[in-house]
Image (cartoon, rainbow, N blue to C red; front, side, top):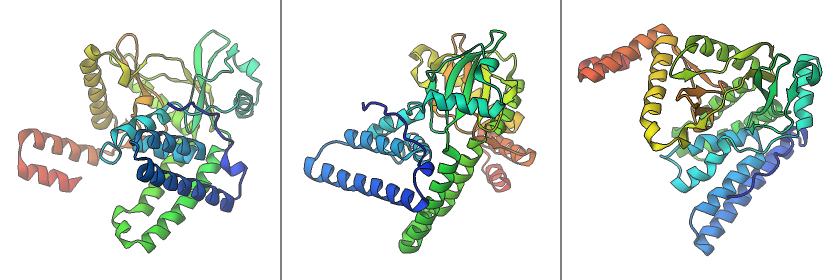
Length: 332
């Protein structure tokens, strides 16, 4: 595996939109030419190609890391070797400097870290495409994590999505067969989701709702946010630890899978809200067996009418009633 490089500075802070577009175009063109030579002349397998592609996406920043995360879960589109290479983008992204992290916290809350926390670990616990996590302790000794949005990430995403929107529009105009894929709609949907993920104050509100719904559950844990310590760029949560859900031992997998599925049944049919980005980097299993959800940047909603229709569809499917299945499907 390739080493994890330090995350580059946000593209929007270094380039104009034209310069950024040129950088993206040159990077992708260079990769395609390298891939063609690698497969045509060297005749090697896909593994080093996938590794190089993952490194390329990481170097291009937040927008493209999110693209890589999405592709890592698409077994219908991506070969297995490439899935494994892209999977490291789920939670192995280069960190930004701890000095910037401290500055972001102090700017968000208007007080120095020494007043907010009894301890603030400079070394990040984890780094992802949108934000970075640091462990800390409150003055009363409570162990917490501090989620800090990457400096410049919001601006970079806006710039990148405008570029990708233009590229998708031109691609569909020049290559009509691509229209059936709805590239522009896909780009716009990704852009909308990324904008929502950038607002950590919004995420904190969802964390609170989920934490209240699952408080005291023997199967699910949602680390709650701390009152007065949430802003658009920084969010503080109770610390919780465990093992990634895709790394648990075989004997525990069936129980874990049942708890995860049951939790989604509750989320969809009772709460009308569900965790919308459940890749393995966002789920872990605690020592007591509970499944812990984190990163609520993407949350899906279902209104009462849609929940009723979905319930009818599920019941019709169980009963193997074809007419009822069709009626419920049309209602949805």
